[in-house]
Length: 156
Image 1: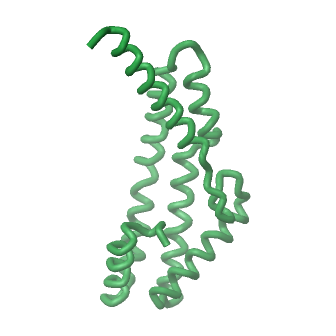
Image 2: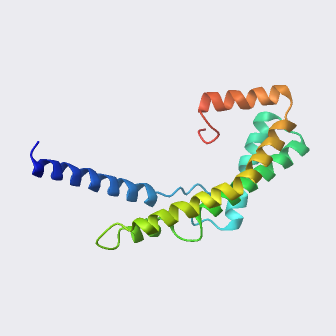
Image 3: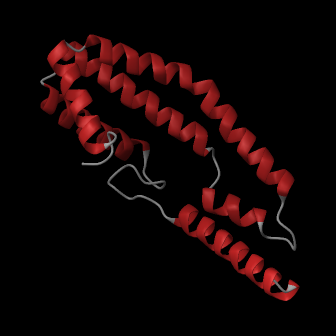
């Protein structure tokens, strides 16, 4: 293949990758409290609705519902820690603001996100285990069925 064709294809692939990344980072979820611009009160209200919905489907008692609430709070805190204080869209834009991609800043950003995930994961895992272990066999089977049918909690 001729060199100019290779360069053109690589340039096109690079531009597609950058545009795809910007589009993905620019997309925000605005589901009544889950979005990036939600107030803490809106986020808590949304988590409360999700806990009520899950509690209804699993017929949870008060103790189980309390453990599910703790899990929701831990997941929210983990999400905020991974997201950090900055706007993710602005963070990505800063990587490509100059003439060249800022590799060092991108690596530092990835390390920051990884560290936040690593430090908060034990609490999330403990909360999930406490909740799941508090369920009876029938409720655990319902959870496995939900996950199998929806391939995760977030789809429906």
